Image (cartoon, rainbow, N blue to C red; front, top):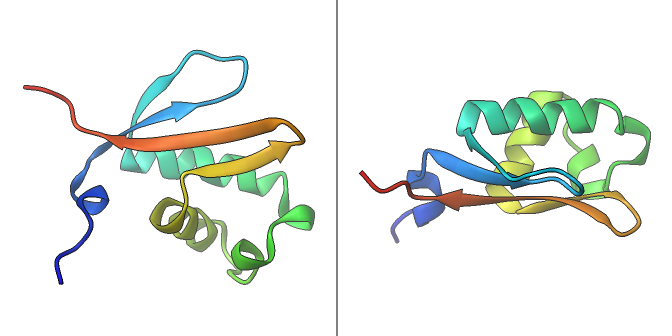
Length: 85
């Protein structure tokens, strides 16, 4: 079985409610996810909370999801993109 195309992508679009979309590298997206998770450790979903470090939590989200609930009605979303050369 081949790896998902998502893992071949190097860039992501990040959608934050009330802000313009951003194009981020994998490292930049992981940093943003860690910043969001840092402030929400007491209210993490069970599947994310099982990881003890911010790095592992952010990597898990990157590998398994494309959104994270910030507040009721507000969702952080990210999608792998391919930039044309």
